[in-house]
Image 1 (tube, one colour):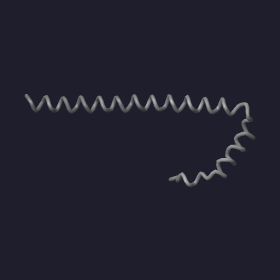
Image 2 (cartoon, helix red, strand yellow):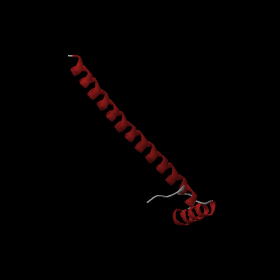
Image 3 (cartoon, helix red, strand yellow):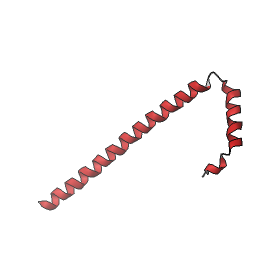
Length: 71
């Protein structure tokens, strides 16, 4: 399922915001935003670590193959 950015018009964003305020209340929304931000930050750091590990493994494999060619 592909969602285009044009699917989120200003009117739909306002409706989503109003519904969020009705469900969670205006005092709870900043806490939810902060929690979401920290969750996304942790996820980004974790995936970055995985990507770095993959890069290190690829470098080790390439170096190993080059060393075998030299011998």
